[in-house]
Length: 73
Image (cartoon, rainbow, N blue to C red):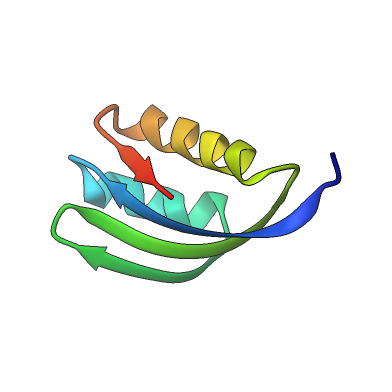
């Protein structure tokens, strides 16, 4: 499969938003980030073979910081 730039819109829910927010800005280029009471809504562009791969990579990184994190894309 070809690696292409993909746009990801995601809702991230976490028990520890203060710990997760720095990671979001560090690991991905976030085009837009909105913080709500329990997490974030983000829009980002990243390169990958599939949207599923990008979702999996992002969720894995976020869960290393906070096990209670979920990602809904």
